[in-house]
Image (spheres, rainbow, N blue to C red):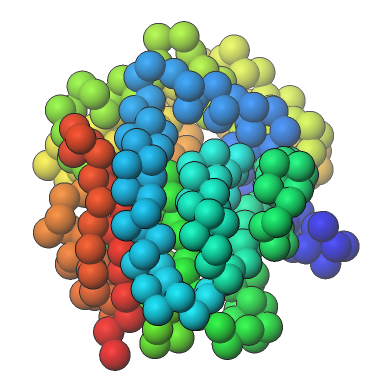
Length: 324
């Protein structure tokens, strides 16, 4: 990571922690769950029996990879594959193997806010698939997308997997999709995962596992504030709480203070006061159906070309194009 990118990420963390903890009600962004500890905890979450999302999307890639790749590069003219929030790349490797086997001309640009995740992924790919032209990018999505758009006029396929779009309520999701639309040329494609509406208990269990890994993942943001901003959060004084509204399809995660307490954040010269049972909203995990995805796309200047589903219809990946 160059010093400019490092400064941008650090200043973003400082700014958003300050804003979120001085607001009412309090909130923190789930994107800050991820550091070396958070990355490891999320790897554990993806392996949990309750967390169906990763398995469902992996099944889609394994079952439909040839069809997916065909739609990415139907004319076999070559393209740049850009993945936002790449993580460990486990699912994407299935597509990369297919692209190599079918001898497509492509480059792979994984983008993630986590330096640890990108460095690990690039290292793995250099060992496992040395023939893949890979260039990892660390930073906020749109700053990196603007940079990539200026670097190349070649067709782009932008991937957003893991239902990361679900971290945004619909108005902000539309803003996000509009920005993606603006970053796309007419022939570019968007390939995006959307977790589908399903039995409410299955949703709740996915974000509130019995072993407590998801709780530790949420609390890691407090641990990061302690470590990076010299704060004194006592993680044992907070509980993780999950809710799900089947009408709106919105799952929400909170950290709730078990008692009245004061937290010092020395790096911000700030004291934060909590009443007993006061909450910090940490994460949104939105669930969808075809009509909602179609509406989101239309509002953003996009349209659905095709979708791919797992056998249980728990999850879908949509191929989306720009309305010309």
